[in-house]
Amino acid sequence: MIHEVDPADAASPIAGLDAVARACADADRVAPLNEQAQLRLKNHGLAGSRLWVSTSDPGSPVDGFALLRGENLDLAVHPDVRREGRGGLLAAAALADVGHVEAWSHADHPAAARLAEHFGLMPARELVVMRRPTALPLTEPPVPPGVRIRTFRPDDEAALLDVNATAFAHHPEQGGMSHADFTERAAEAWFDPEGLFLAVPDDPAEAPLLGFHWTKVHRDEEPAYGEVYVVAVSPQASGRGLGTLLTAVGLRHLAEQGVGEVILYVEGDNRPAIAVYTKLGFEVARTEVQYLGTPTV
Image (cartoon, rainbow, N blue to C red):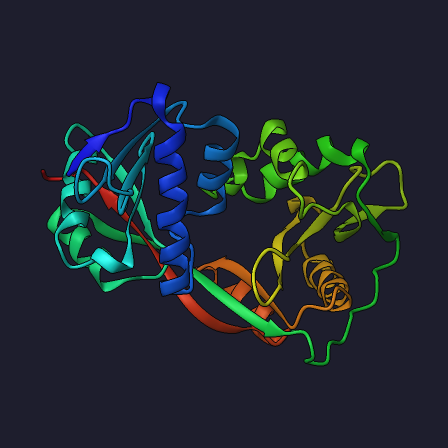
């Protein structure tokens, strides 16, 4: 049975969504909802979103969901009931009156590729997930003259958002990080200002911030691991080696947190960044695929 959830009565279905997401993460070794989707549900519920769920019978636990956030579709089916057609039914319900859709397959699952093809969606982007053991030796580059590395203070937020916006001006998600987005992330248990490293100039005539490396430690997973969450360098400061320096500083910090591995996400077509990370000891762990198009239902 497929039905759309009334946002006014969403508490129980959202809890069911969480249970399905956890089961999928355990089976596939990757979460079916990205951080942006999880934070939106946590802080805003179904405001501005639509949710369809599947159940075997009335009153049965939720065993699949399709979450539509604007043009962004997230869909998952509990591993115990896969290959029974629930994914196709959920997708058909969610895409019935959508003009354009964007959907990520975080595990690059063959079933997701088949669903995308069936509904006329084409692969458009890839995110490469890379990983590096913290035990691997790391050479930290010298700090360039006229630059200092320090950690984040609350009055740095505006400058950080400015650098983020310019560094990721053409990035569909990251470049649009707002004050509200930053505040939501800073309120999470994992946020640590001592793990957010800034490159600042000695010369007050320069911009207040040249670049930053925001690290993250996933202590809610077993085993815990670190993440190169965001590395951004102002275009005005490019060519000074700050990206490599900031990355190395953050990697040293993450190693000191006692985690055995660090991951990062990078656009699949960003060859220069992939080359830098490869030189730092990162290897490709998996690829995530985004499908786009006008669905045929």
